[in-house]
Image (cartoon, rainbow, N blue to C red; front, side):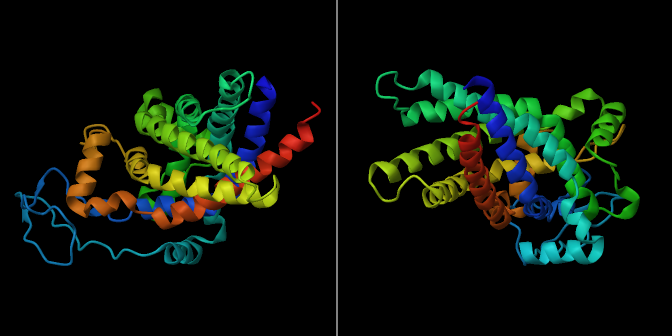
Length: 324
């Protein structure tokens, strides 16, 4: 199984990633909504300003500071998609797709392949059963390793997807994933390629464990109880359920990851966030706890189809490669 598991998982992941890329881009744009309204260190707000609301609060600005504009109106995924199409063109919906392909090649190929390796090693030799606890453990380990390998492509993908929302003068205008990684290394240091890596690893561990373990467990339950036969219907049902579980579990970490990766760090300028915890606290303080579920609708809208395409493609690729 060894190498074949990596090949099968890689092909399925690339197909799934490319086919759902526009939904992922919309998700990233929605996760960044309201971020520009987070006060900078020179702007003081009352300590009780915990939840974002329509009630006007008094903001005291330090001498020389600039008052923030009213927070932008929050819009849904369809409106975000239409706005991108109208202002940036249809090709903008595929911004960063080269980074998506590289990310799936590095991250998903590694996690899917390692999961299959663990599945072979940890299954009961007599019955062939793979207990849920071991499935979760395999997903956690495989996801963490895959995320560490694919983090540079993940940072590049987030930045390329978010670029269009910035004023023209502030855009990075990366030509592609190679240009993005090269410029980040040169301008911000090689370490910038692993910015937010702790979040990426944590998210990937949760996603992989919930997604792969849920798919295997739900598929086994359906077959064992004779609800459906092993075929397309079973694969679609199990994969969509797995996608929902993964979306619910990972969305808060995904929001923080997106913001940390996207922040602009310039010499001599205090960055918006000092780290993941600082980003989480500021997001909750100034936008409310539900801000951690920004982009959830496009997340589940993307995670569902992504997971369905991923596992349906994987099952078909396995059939094609069963004799290799």
